[in-house]
Length: 178
Image: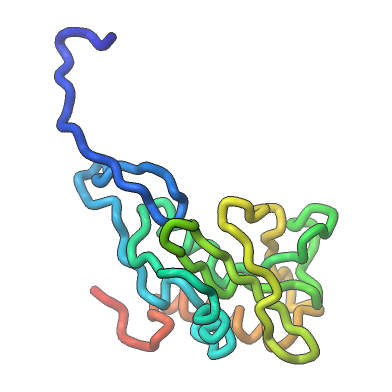
């Protein structure tokens, strides 16, 4: 029971984030909305094969997610990832030829976020895995170290994504918002 000299604040009704499927407050502690609008650039890398694969995933897309999910999207999109079941510490060495990339994160209304993972197979970029975000093993995430044996096509996508992040330019090439 709270002390009698503390007044309760206003009640803020929760809403269910379509990405994490958690009941979250509508407002953040700073008073801003806890619903972040997602653009295509927030959900997928600007590569034709990735866009095509994302369009094949069934289900209605959610256009807004909670603040923590939006931040997770920014951190995960374009991250290198090891194959499932690979043993050892991902931080122990650079990625190899079987290294993939998180190419898309798709919030599907009522079903959570689907993570599309791409690998280069026979010199072609392919979506090889679709994983639920809540089941994605963070130990699979890796770093490039040096270029090593990462497939050149995947390496080019990764470098382009990093260059856009460092330049602060949205992937569609438009000027950064000030």
